[in-house]
Length: 257
Image (tube, rainbow, N blue to C red; front, side, top):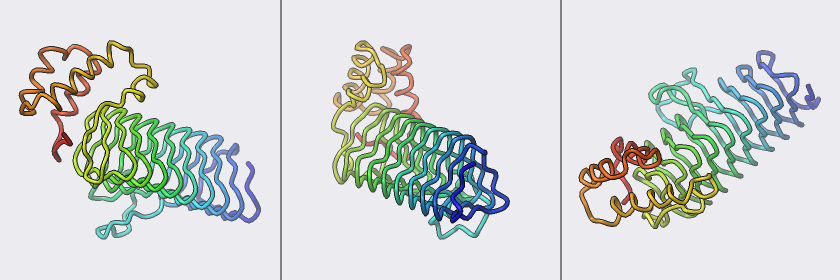
């Protein structure tokens, strides 16, 4: 284990011997770190926080600190991170709240760029990217592969679907369906994230079906229930469309259209 002599590691922390902890880093007593994690200078890991393997926490990041929620009264809540995440300088990731289920979850392979923020009770899917100053408010749930541009903001309790792309400087206050691109201060749907789908390995036929599903829901001017029923009848047997339909049917905050 490589721990810099100026780092402060609490006695109760459970740290795999393969981890590296840099100068002046602070590790709290309830932190658990799996193999080959690295923690940069002046970074803070606190709270009931569990890291998987090969995460990189850069200098001055704050991971597992208390939630910014006025209802929080010091309850024992958690942050659980998967593997191979990168948390850049001054990014913040908070533990959950008792009212929100008690756990903030970050999947695997995520990139949280400098000064980005993951609030209490967020569930962040695998391979998500938050660009600089992107912020997810409390209780936000994102599916795998979602990308948030710089200075974007997502309101509390909102869901963002698989491989969705939220452009820089955009505000999101309702659910964003899978595969879509959203842009603008009021978060308007502007199309399909075709490049993201291609990079994720979707075939030309799958992308074509997603385009047709998008047309039916977002361009045919049908009531949502009618559009969903049509999708089920015409393409519901295809996995990518079935996932799209499930997301639409479970929307509770309303859907950006």
